[in-house]
Amino acid sequence: MIPKIELHLHIEGAAPPAFIRGLAAEKHIDISGIFNERGHYAYRDFWDFLRVYEAATSVLQTPEDFARLTRAVLEESAANGVIYTEAFLSPDFCGGRDLSAWRDYLAAIQEAAAEVEAQGGPILRGIITPIRHFGPEKARETALCAAETAGDFIVGFGMGGDEKAGEPKDFQYSFDMAREAGLRLTCHAGEWGGPDSVRRAWRDLRVERIGHGVRAIEDPALVDDLAEAGVVLEVCPGSNVALGLYKDWRAHPIGRLYERGVKVTVSTDDPPFFHTTLTREYDRLAEALDWDDAVFHTLNRTAAEAAFCDGATRAALIKRLEGQP
Ligand SMILES: [Zn+2]
Image 1 (cartoon, rainbow, N blue to C red):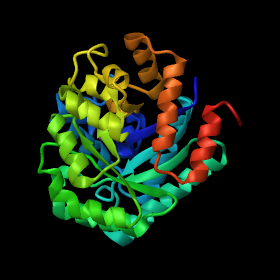
Image 2 (image 1 turned 120 degrees about the horizontal axis):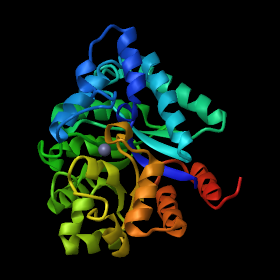
Image 3 (image 1 turned 135 degrees about the vertical axis):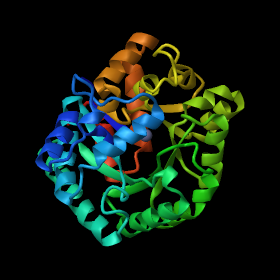
Image 4 (image 1 turned 180 degrees about the horizontal axis):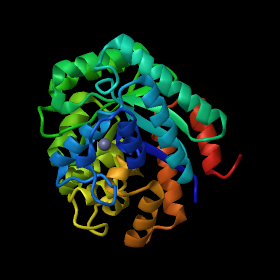
């Protein structure tokens, strides 16, 4: 139960199925088709996963729903020893990218997070995420929401969604707007796209972290470049295995990337969708790669240094990783 830092978590994707079912029942919405007989989220492949994800998300309709979601997610994080989480928050799902609606959702999320933090629970910071397959125009509206609400809580901007939709450079305008507003940048790449997608996201969007990025392993020169530049990968091994990107944990490249000097971190992405938790990720990695506490300590230290929070928060996190109160 070592203290953990998580940099890649989609807040709606972290919604416990029981929480979503409860909300659907309250609102008389029938989403029974997205669950299997054991009550878990059920999907066939990545594209079907996106469909199920959007159906689950459809029951989250008000700022209060998101406040409750935030508490439910942070409760899970706390149960897994997480002391700091960066969650992807999407104005697409919070008021349809309308800035004033987004401010209401954000206030509710932030208030719930502040309560949890005041009670000694995990610290939450937000990364605004445009959805790639919604296209560059909608991403601009999302970037405007991000730029207008950047601050101590909204600290980053990072694109998720279907990596095969469009090119990173189509989203340059949005990333530039976010950067100018002082937000730190990350982008999903190198999950469904190959190493080239990592290079393009890195080069064209000037991000300092890559979401996933694991397929960089297919291009040794890129691995060297990432290691040398200190680009941090938000690796989510259980997500990759669950979605069939790698056949099992041993085949996952996180160990090889680490050995080659790439700054890797471990996160859960959308944990209940992948039947995982951060504790389970650590257990499986320890088993598959023979990693001990010293390796996990290094990964958490990397994550603390790569976190988009302010310096005082980072210093406090590093102290806690070192075992100080
Ligand atoms: Zn993700």
